[in-house]
Image 1: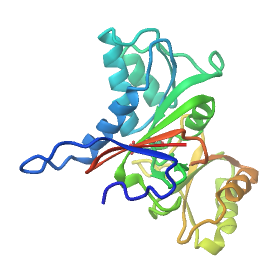
Image 2 (image 1 turned 180 degrees about the vertical axis):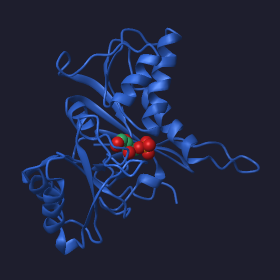
Image 3 (image 1 turned 60 degrees about the vertical axis):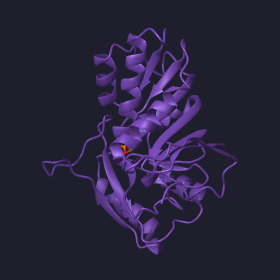
Image 4 (image 1 turned 30 degrees about the vertical axis):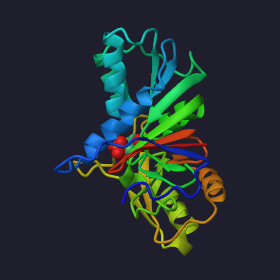
Length: 260
Ligand SMILES: O=C(CO)[C@H](O)[C@H](O)COP(=O)(O)O
């Protein structure tokens, strides 16, 4: 049920409670993603340097930014894309683009997530993009994460789905084994991600992804994060700890905003 994970809210607000409709309108997951995305774009102001996220939720935000630019309601935006796919989308919409080398400080990033815990920690990267997102969102003054309510979990890994780790292709089995051994007590399975042809999935950075499946909580997230990053062969992992400044959740009951 909607928005039940508020126990750690420092500030929380139900922003848009749709009026009761008869008969009730059931929104699809994609419609909820779009609602969250449009709400986030309300934070965008002319002249901002913007981190542009990746995935089906962030895509709606990028579309909306493009639309507002064309309508003249936003001006002088510079986008910093978090993937090649988003770069292509933004270019097709005429959004001016740059990169972190030229804009090391970003005003605002808008991006989706695969999981959100009550402390606003995230899992990202199930769509295959995590390293660039972590670099861009790490350089932001404000990071607004946009999700539908299915992404809310009590603890990271709680959905039972993958915890992605980007690794160098060189001896990836060695790295995957180290990862599996590290989380052996949590019943960890470490699996190389394949593409639709059954070949190893290759990230925008030329790396592979090892997906970790955990049967139990991984314990202290900071400790786990540091330990993963110490394994030679690991490039980055999909835990975004303490990075989101706001999470916008669209659910059956409306939109909820949670701030750090
Ligand atoms: O991390 C990501 C890309 O790798 C996405 O933000 C995450 O997978 C959420 O995707 P979606 O909005 O399609 O549910």
